[in-house]
Image (cartoon, rainbow, N blue to C red):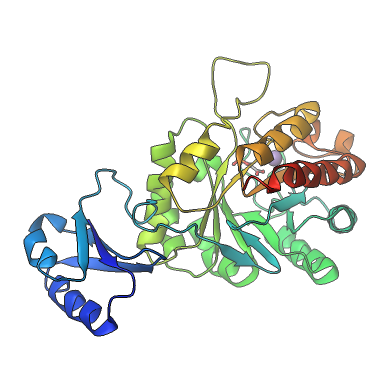
Length: 337
Ligand code: PEP
Ligand code: MN
């Protein structure tokens, strides 16, 4: 349920209203916008009597939200959520580029790639330490040591680090050392993990499951936000469809849909979204044009020898050209935004 209070209403009147609302078994989330102060009520909203709220002169309207996601809902929070990570801002007017290998493989590998993507203009460094591989016989990642190496790369380049969490046992370490904690497609509905991540105060990159609807994705964001962690970045990374030429079918339509339904930032992963190097560049540019707030791209200095996802990894030189093209598309569209 949303209570729309006229912007500019005296604070003491708002406080009086809050005192009334807090008598019901609901939690109130306040968002101060330009036209309204929105009071988002979650919990047992059936017990709330809207007429008691509407009797306050400062209240313009009381609306029940039909969608099952509330805190992630654009109607709950009119302005875009902007999340600051290092020098980057995701969700505002900046376009954020996250780049790096699928997996951290060695000190030399991650250092080489980190320096290359930094030089090309990346805003953050990605690299998996714990890898969700389909086969138990495939490289599983370096684990804790991989995280140590990412931190070394961060110390060297000053790039914030993005890496995937797979287990609730690692939440403390990730909360301390990782700048943007990735929840991969396979764990998008690991509700135990999502709840734990709701209790920390670090931004979460929530990737869409390969057969998840947009509503499923927003409900997973809701799990994190309900714990109090409101910094969630959503990521479209392709769906499993009947088309089997590409690894996944990238649903770029999800970008405008998510921006309409939610205030949370949305980025695109053209690497897992296609599985093929030659598709990464066109899909990344399409993501910019579709209004995404950023991209996450796999880059490897030696893709032929990569321990995972070599076929979809860009060479560092290709990534550098892509960054230039991304800027060109942004510049072309700037006057319309
Ligand atoms: C990844 O980013 O390396 C990854 C495994 O992505 P996804 O969860 O989207 O498959
Ligand atoms: Mn990968």
